[in-house]
Length: 596
Image (cartoon, rainbow, N blue to C red; front, side):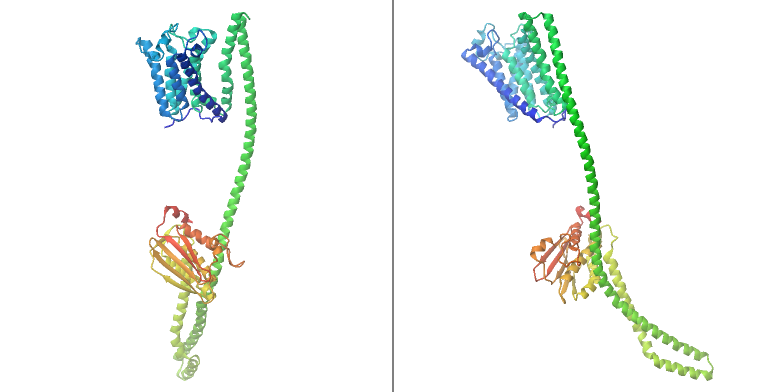
């Protein structure tokens, strides 16, 4: 499991590419230089073994370990297991030599090759103690570079820095002719080209993981990274170079040691002051660009906020427009529905009104007859005959027998008309139910019958008959009012598409775990070229002013929110069949969408 790096800044891509070249170059050099040393031992060429006359030659075991390190560094990403094996061998070579030196045990790991030639040297050639220690550190660092752990990779970089320090110290010793810097006690010193190869290997190890650990600071795409890349080379090379020039000048008599020391301090001060001024100027320009960029970002943020605000306003306006369009479609459907309902209510209402007029007339006549009879009862004998004569005349005029026998039938017919009106009002209430906001189980057949009763007047106006084929259905979890609206929209379209005298059929059935509602007409059908567009918002084939183009789109959305679908089967000239398929169970995906 990868651990978070303590340096989380991004790396400069150009620096990463260059460090990749450094790692590959160091790997190649770590193979070529010791390879030449081995060739020098094999052919007995002193220049290949020791670089300069009088210097220590590279031990063959040292050369073999270097070749293993170079090959492992080159194959680090491709063959990690091979790298681990090579690193282990290098660690064992160095550790064996250190154990031999510490305990006096004759472990001749550095005398395996060219034993006779090694012993024939003025000083028998052996692996130096600092060389053996550097191989142990280098092998461990190589092993750690194959780990995916960031902490382990950072530890490997620390070991590589230690190797670089030993190698750099030895090179400084050779440059300053200070033997104590490249040898340990009375043991054979580290060879010059051995120190150089160790320094190259350390640089290659550090460059192989440039985005982690201490290298992440140097490769960072930030002012601190740029500052480190500019100052580190000067901090490492400038004092060493000026120190060598001071020693060389003093030894050759160019100036006295005191003057040379003062000159070195002065030059280092001036150079670092110039570098510091240069870096401060760069930082100042970078800060100016940063402030300019921040100003641009603030301006862009302001414009973005304005754009977001405008988008929100546009979204709100769009939602309002959509709501208005939906309401317009509902009102358009309501207009057709109200016209039919008004026709359905007007017939029984006119019948009841006429009956009320007749009832008022007959009741008035009966009341007059009863009043005469009561007057005759209270009158004297001489007046009673005249009153009864008037009562007889009135009874004949109003046909009292017929009126009395017709009153019960008149009341029954009036009550039937009022029940018809009451049923229509109930169907309207059952159809609407617009206040429902939660899913509830409903009998779709009851809602379909209410919808048909409401739209029947529109069908009569169009001279279209509605035929129902409703089979018993289980309760369906849904929004009943919305399903009624879908059936209303499909029925209205079917009626409008049907010719005079045609029949529109509404059928229901259960199919497995779903309910089907079919609305079938015998109209002209749907042209195949527009069949894929009939559910698009605002698409309509009706003349201008006779439809909003939203009925099918709204119906499609309602059915989809219920987890169902609407299928269309239409052949030009043979009418259309719209099939609503609704699942009997409400899934979590659609229940939220039904809330309305």
